[in-house]
Image 1 (spheres, rainbow, N blue to C red):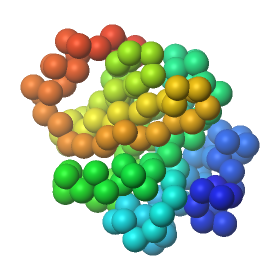
Image 2 (cartoon, one colour; image 1 turned 30 degrees about the horizontal axis):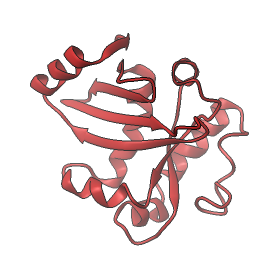
Image 3 (cartoon, rainbow, N blue to C red; image 1 turned 90 degrees about the vertical axis):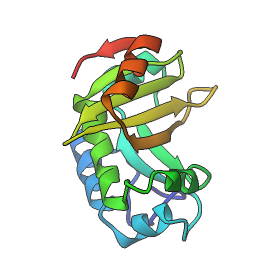
Image 4 (cartoon, rainbow, N blue to C red; image 1 turned 180 degrees about the vertical axis):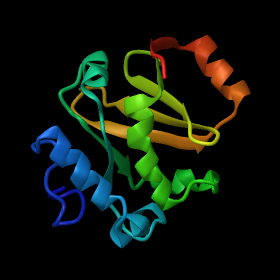
Length: 155
């Protein structure tokens, strides 16, 4: 994204959805993205394109989910997650079980061999989207998510 990532990554906000998804998929495979996740570069980087139904639910026109330099280091407490696995977030958002946790947070979960959870938040002004957490989970945690948040979409 111009100003937010590699100069060779086009603005995912403006591309047609299929092109944005393809560009994002390519971006998540780069050494630059891996360096960012490991804390060797600053800024914000795209990790997913929010499906239109979730844009509506969050009342946002933004569609690119970003990982910030502030959140990336916090992800190190989930050592089971490596840079390549961030590509899974798109499928979790598109095909996973979705819960609304308040009006600004989406909790998305999907089994990919085992449960994985991605938490997306929108800013107070609803102009930006950020990955708040991405982690491996288990049935007990999924049960807690189901109990405390509103189901939006089943897997």
